[in-house]
Amino acid sequence: MTFGSEASDVDFGKLAATFGTPLYVYDADALTWQYQGLRESLHPSLEIFFSLKSNPNVSVCAVLHALGARAEVSSLTELLTALRAGVDPDNIIFLGPGKSRAEISACLAEGVHAIVCESFGELGRINEMALDRGQVARVALRVNPAFAVKGSRLTMGGRPRQFGIDEAELLARPDLGEEYPGVRLTGIHVYMGTRILDENVVVENTRRILDLAERLSARIGFPLEMVDIGGGLGVAYFDGERDLDVRALTEQLNPVIEKFHAAHPNTRMIMELGRYLSAPAGVYLAQVLYTKESMGEHFAITDGGTHHHMAAVGTGSFVKRNFPIRLLNRPTTDATEPWQVTGPLCTPNDTLGKNVPLPALRPGDLIGVLRSGAYGPTASPVQFLSHGYPAEVLIWEGSAHLVRERDRPEDLLGRQRLHPALSPEAGGRAMASDVRPAPA
Ligand SMILES: *Cc1c(COP(=O)(O)O)cnc(C)c1O
Image (cartoon, rainbow, N blue to C red):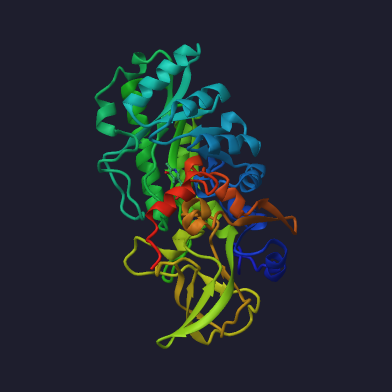
């Protein structure tokens, strides 16, 4: 069960030999399985938008687009990625608390479905920029709700946040719609948090968000063309966690959606999902370089680590919890002892797994960190120790394609400039000799 929930017959040894390690491997079948599993049970009027933040690889985005997913983006490059993957601008929304002029300008030029606005300052800027272009911008308001629902790993509502506009502030501005002639308010967006593994929390969030959307649109007086209920659906990573039960979720959620849909048949309803779609479809593949013992513990030092997979290292949490880790080149060998699976970085934090039960390891073994398709390299310090970005491969219709090249030293060094006066050919050498201690 390497990818998704189906047995996988991927030959990781061949992938390592062909593409080198460390390597991210994404499986289109697993993306499909995860997407369709939800899509087939979910109320048809609730559209699924893929949050590119979780995995911005253009081929991953294209697989999900081919399945019917739309796109939620938060930077200029993410917008360009979604467009390149073939997503129609009317199926793209752009959010984020600090949109630049270039980003707003691109949203207006491309005609995205909605710019999700997160502050009054931004609303003013969108208004100005739209008027300059002779356009009326379609804007959804991101709301920081007064309520919070417990059960997500990062709770958004009910506290001061840089995201969205406070519910109370919006309720106090009934004339908001008329104040910005370059803006047409079209909807409401609320994101309540991430890594939710409790079906009831998703349902309760949705219920409250839909209620809030109705109250705000009535108060401010704009028709609800769209409501984005966020999402934040999680996947199980650690011992003691379980995946969401899609049937239990949709049995409760669909009636809530149906009720709103019946009352607002022309409102687009959006759920934005990152991790839920992409995490199960990715494996981080690293190769054991050396094994050794230190004070009675077994260490496997691999070529992969924190710089590519910060999430597996688990910084921020007090107790390190392991992602699912497997020996992939000898998958049927029984685990016999606990291993510290570490990386090449010169910091003790560079530990992919602590006390991982594995067979006796040897150099050349292939270690897979499963469920790694979300918040992998793009959410990691890939430049640390100047290692650079790993290669990424997509398995599509049974064969593996390179979908991102590994950074080479010349790629990393090519971005730097050696100050001419410090180059060995110029004054640098003279300066250095000035401070060199005299030979004894
Ligand atoms: C990060 C983020 C997402 C994606 O979150 P997941 O937990 O990966 O699904 C969606 N919407 C907003 C506003 C976000 O900040």
